[in-house]
Figure 1: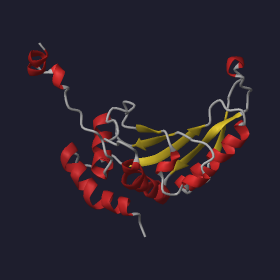
Figure 2: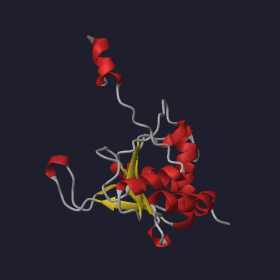
Figure 3: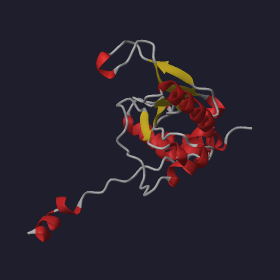
Figure 4: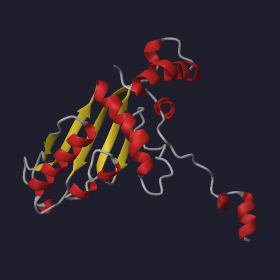
Length: 196
């Protein structure tokens, strides 16, 4: 059985993007290729234990075993040796990717305190979107009583879109809660007159 978000993409989003982007070839319609979840433990005294905790949490959240990332070179100012563990990462594809995206957009992000939407500007120029999450407790898989340390991580959504606008249209059609930018009142002529 296919994930609900993938079925929604095939049945509704593809037709919507085909019409909006004016594309005739179905292979030109943007799609999500993979999702990379990256978590760094930073500068902590018990770094090995922190990496282990991060690995367990990321594995719970994504449903896939994480890989430990290690430093490529030694940096004395950061008291960092070559080959020392820094964090964990996991690359999601296929069914697990679709299920994770659905949980992220429909269950985790709306739980964030004072949530007004995610930034629509965090694209890299090639249609890929990166989202920073500061607390792992927003995911329903994490039990708040068992959290040993607060972990933040990056979620990078890699798409086949060639432009940021196409990538934004794809994610918006899938249900990513982007915040709408509205001009500030002070920037309008009426706002300037009111301030004077």
